[in-house]
Length: 262
Image (cartoon, rainbow, N blue to C red; front, top):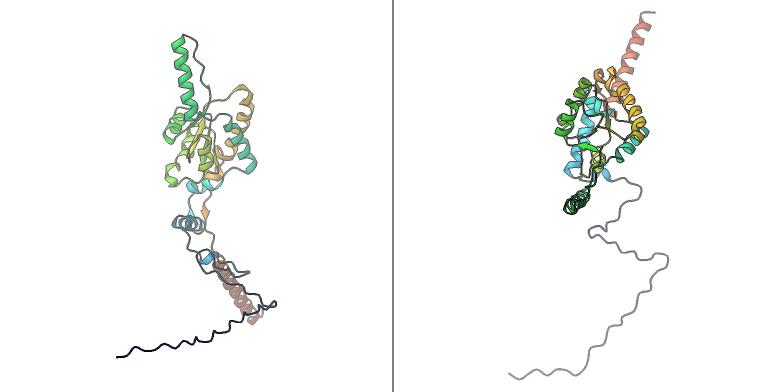
């Protein structure tokens, strides 16, 4: 079979005319990749977000504490110190923070060096914050603790639910503060359920006495705190429904009285 002859003529090139962009309608290409979606203006889409499980559990717990009847023993943990009272308390605690691991290591080196040279070893700190649930409990039982601070958001609450009763029985001033992370930062930990102080310097004795008096009035000797139940607050929809039902009952009663000529 004879080979096909290719024609030497080239195909005419297509005219590529450039499109002129309209200045009235500029091109705005959308990016629909991850993180590039355009959020509708003026809409709060947070209710459509699938939050992490721990966030959902926190919110559900908070709502349950509002809806259900909460016994006084648990409800007292919602009565934390005010901002000014907490500032005074943490200012005192900050002066008696325990040593960090690096500081302890340095101190051990200095003590070892003093022993080797026959010199006098440096004295340790006389007063400092005590932490750890077992340690604080022992100090309260032995009446060595002068002031105790308990976190309001310990989970599970059963870890510290008995501690206020023990402090009342042993006549040790205690307060409930926000929150466990803030207490943990004082003692170089992530969180701390409770901290106690066994003594202070003479310069801080007046501050400790005023805090102890406030704690005895607000927590230890507060009968209302031990008796008052919490919770029982319905949601907005339920409240609106109950109000509507109450208005209907009032209207029916008014009709009855009017029909009876009263």
